[in-house]
Image (cartoon, rainbow, N blue to C red; front, side, top):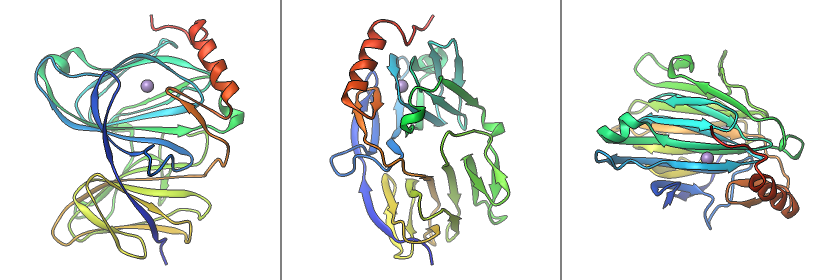
Length: 288
Ligand code: MN
């Protein structure tokens, strides 16, 4: 028997970074986090006119990881560790901020000039107390390196950004057990994935609509189905007449206090104050 869906969360529309639109299932008043996931932002889809695309200029992070997955558009990332990465559709950047980095997340110059559609995700993965000050790490992963599994020979597939499906494991390494899958189901197709009951799990609908879990809960584009921890598999089914595109996320909850303030997520208020001090005194570096 698969898990039940305990909650379907509607996204809140808001602006992020320099003012680009995101659809956000959490953190919102309805749901502060799905431990260990702190934030899920669907960036766009937004059609920019030439010269208009906006990103997130230089800002710091400490205490967690930021994951960017692009479906459409072009972004470039720079950070105070000297890393530079260009993201094109299908690419993933998994950045462990850990002890602290300053980074920028901007459209490429070419994309900004031409305009076009930005569509993608940013997900924040919390780090346990013992890893909050781990050295920063940057895993820039081009689309071609992300394993893809054919589910039925008829066009349904899963891209494995983190975790394992069958005997195929992601190339991205995570500090705690994390599953991050992009699943595309043809009309009428179904996907079942094993997740230990100790882990929290959810499915975000990118487009289409489908039925989730033992209770066949319906969720549509822009909604997040959160699974109960009551069984060992999660399920998603496309309706007979439409494609279903979704993200499946799962992780072992940290069960630690979360104190967040803007770009910093720590366990105590003192650690947040320390993060501000360290950022302001330049200890997180600058982008050269
Ligand atoms: Mn950032």
